[in-house]
Length: 286
Image (cartoon, rainbow, N blue to C red; front, top):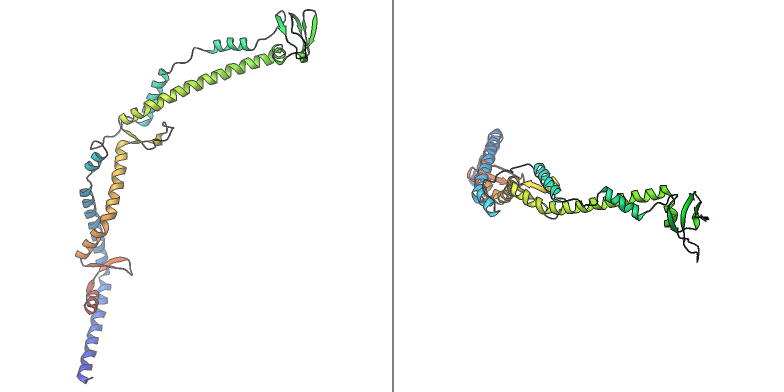
């Protein structure tokens, strides 16, 4: 190689090294400026993204697709107000059965008679082939009963008759019967009320401006099951626009950064300005 050629090459490398040094120094000294500029571009990207998302999916368009008026009005009443009004309406519409406490008490007395001294009764024995015995009760003790001129052992009587001679056990059976019947009556009333509640409440809530979030939930009087229609719409709008933003963001980000002299550095996972150093590297790479 000629001496003049080597000198030229060394000179070019020297110039190139000096330019690289200056470019690196320039990038370091201006780092604060380009970081601020990047923040400005990020704000521009967000603003542009919001504009394009809103243009692609206007709120009125989504409301129309959901079958809602726009703007979507807030509910007329609170959930608790509607719940209370519907309960009152149903409570008044379901009549109570005619079997009140007095009727149930008479039924209990007929089902569970109480034998007292002076009563004319027929007592049945639990002994094999022993016939029933009829007569007037003259005395009752814990173990025996005098029926006419005969004394009978209580243990030899059938259970129903033996209990009928025991006031404490008989009254307990009557009380238990009345309690059970009242419980069954209340359960039947509550079942009817619940059926009507499930029929009336959805229409009332929908009319007042609410949406049911769980159609399969049987506990319709749970506040979390219902959401205000305007909030339901806002959530749907936010979710739909978020999906659009995810799709549009990469292209918008690339366009705005590129137009402003930035490039994406894969090794740093960030956008940075191209700068002199990058231009020189790009030149020699080409």
